[in-house]
Length: 139
Image (cartoon, rainbow, N blue to C red; front, side, top):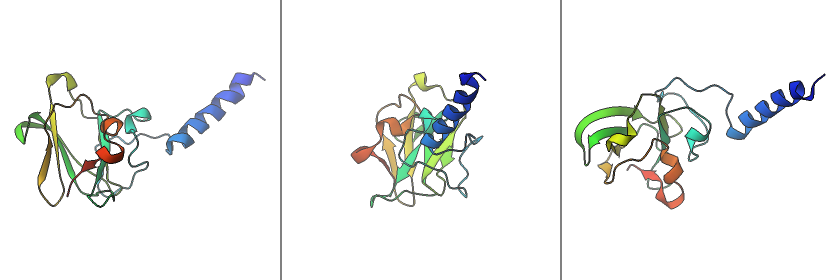
């Protein structure tokens, strides 16, 4: 028996366990009633989403039910291109096509004020930049 026939399935299982997933990528967008996994990690390292991340409350807990939007202009301006609600784990994700080279912007809102990112968004891998002390907050 070839070593590759044994090795490939073992490596596949290890890769799935390392990401915490079961190998399935949700079709998206986020289902607010569903809990996902690995809050705070860069979702796009394992999943093929166009936009994904985690929203937190100011107390550090994750924020289920927050709304994340991608817009064509800064500070709540322009057309809303993507609108997703965080799931029970505070994560959001979608596979909706997004033209990141078009100078897009984002904002997030929980039950309080709308918080906008003043600079254009370079990609949909939100947790790749927003980690540690620079998490996405909505409160």
